[in-house]
Length: 283
Ligand SMILES: C[S@@+](CC[C@H](N)C(=O)[O-])C[C@H]1O[C@@H](n2cnc3c(N)ncnc32)[C@H](O)[C@@H]1O
Image 1 (cartoon, rainbow, N blue to C red):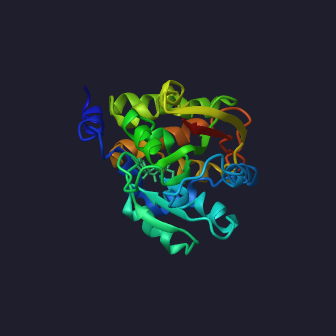
Image 2: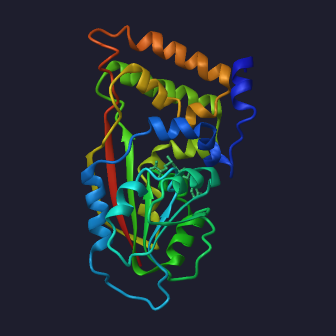
Image 3: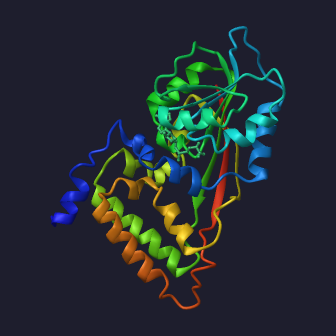
């Protein structure tokens, strides 16, 4: 193993602290991550506002958002929720919750780990997850999500995914991710980036939920420009976990390489995004 590999893989034995990676780049995260399209927000609202199939006297929240981060979806959904809907936006990271709070949205906030939700059984009508279900799409958290949902309640997921297929320079980035994964070794993080988690495959085998809606729509994406693309990549957990030296070497190589492809104009470069919209009903 080279020094560089040791440096990258040694300290990154990611287990439970995996998700906290985002807090290293809070400001950049808020600035360079995409938001969500009007269509995506419309679909979320449509599901949340459909007449309830069941009602429960123990209901405490119409909406519990898990993994809300800095509130990129919360800020689009919350202002459109009808009066009387109780909305609690949460994240495992208290630092993210502080940013979310500063947006003064009509929601309650709390620091919550999806694997241990401090709410009674059958107390939530809808659980909303934006680009985060892949982080806790495991037996422990799915059982917990099912426990707090009322029977017939919904787990709604809207997630953006980069499309790294259409252009050689995008494939270059994809290949570099594969290299990064190898450097980091096996961990929660690399599980999150495996196709199982990305496609939410564990949901197919999960006996607590039935998939009732699965659609793909064009994502909102990020503004064009190589600098923006690199700043975006810099917020991606795979890179954030690398040591500063290794990450800088990766970026400098990428920056030099991607502009060498014919027809590439750094000012127009952007990553295409597709949003996956998935609705699961609690059995
Ligand atoms: C890619 S970010 C998405 C944040 C936000 N929903 C958005 O759309 O920008 C994933 C979020 O999931 C949170 N997260 C990861 N694992 C979690 C867990 N076990 N419980 C709750 N939140 C978690 C992270 O802290 C992070 O804020």
